[in-house]
Amino acid sequence: MARPRDPQLERTWSRRLERHGVSGLSIAEFCEREGLAPASFYYWRRRLAAGATPPAQAPPLFVPLRLDGPRGRDGAPAARPFEIELPAGVRLRLDAPPEPEWIGRLVAAVAGLEAGRGGP
Image 1 (cartoon, rainbow, N blue to C red):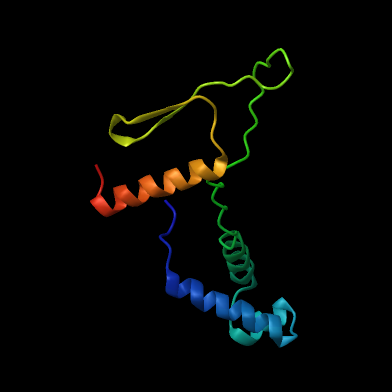
Image 2 (cartoon, rainbow, N blue to C red; image 1 turned 180 degrees about the vertical axis):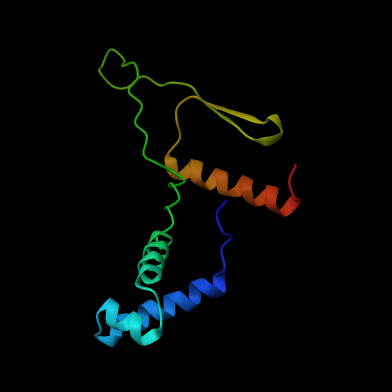
């Protein structure tokens, strides 16, 4: 079983690695001077580097969407019904898809109402 994380020990080794970086010494010289085993130095350097990966970015809330649907006789896109389902069983039915900005404002308004109410 793996040893549990020890933040204090990680900070200690992080400081040691920083000191080595500015010391101008080789790893062997630095370890001898600090009384460390070179294997421990390499282990902690790998371990701390592995944990330093940046957090993944959250996906965007809205992404562009293109709907290619049927076209009318004049070649223009035919109007298609559009439906949005909101909390509490509320449905909005529209003759055509609204502008993305409008949908964004609607979602923000509904989210604000839900947050102010403490949820459904």
